[in-house]
Image (cartoon, rainbow, N blue to C red; front, side):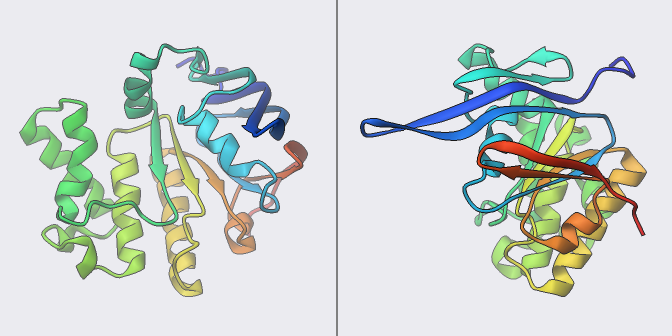
Length: 234
């Protein structure tokens, strides 16, 4: 990827939802550029468009108008049959509720994206184990989600999101289901992965502590970017 090409770019992004006879605006002209290796927090009140923006960037939904580009490719107009490949290769997802498969072990959960990508079994197991080691879960390979704490489940979810080496990780309220101390541990882990692997993170959050660790804070209000501020990390 050329050094001047952003990992994510949205251009005048608009999203409206049809509710009965009415069009409800969720995004209203959002233009955003995310460079490789950035850690950006997206903030705003409920209904400001944060999760909608993440869904459009992650190819989980399509815009009403405007464009989404991932590593230079306009994905907002991609064919439906191409979207699973784009999500698999370019995007990692971390959710508030972890979304681990309860019948699978830690290792099996992290192996799933590699199997969908048809990575050879031996290489897949090696990469999954290495990623779990990097999030300090290498000692829990055979445990199922019910046997893990909330913080441990989120670590596994982060490993799963990163194992295919995506261009960007999209995290929607990743600390929303854990206590304050665990939340701090998770955000410090994500910052460590950002710094050591150069992994790009785009994190939707209500948590000021998360935002305090970000390099940029983007505030949304009424479907528009109200402010986009670079921070001075302590």
